[in-house]
Amino acid sequence: MTVGFSAKGPLFEPGLVQEVQDVINTGLMELAIIEGANKVRDQLWGPPRHEYNQSSASQRHGKMDGTLKRSVGATDIKDNVVRVDAGETLLGKDLVYAAWIEGVGSRNKRSRFKGYKMFEKAARHMRDTPGLWDKYIGLQIARILK
Image (tube, rainbow, N blue to C red):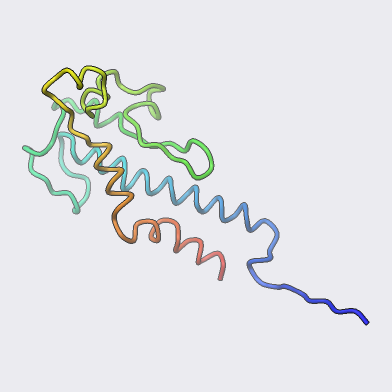
């Protein structure tokens, strides 16, 4: 006598692990661009990009020429890791003064200027806003598992 079982369904499809990983990486990149890089850009001079941040000009930072604003970008480092940066994605290295503006440069410790913490605020927004992870990653994973 033999006993056996058969498993069928989307969880047992070959290649599912890679498909889920691709969905996660794509979702993280969208999250980093839309909710990260754009959140940083919205804090810099120029018109706001999104309706969720209609801040006045007095709350924006940076020179009117917009060099830092144009340099903010996002890139994927490896599976499950993305980075929002101040130029490395687009220029190959961060802008020299970006650390000073953010407040993480070595000179900020000795100065009265402690930085604007724009990247920190964007990271906190991505981490703490309810539903963002589901919106960009969770719903897409649920869709492929149906």
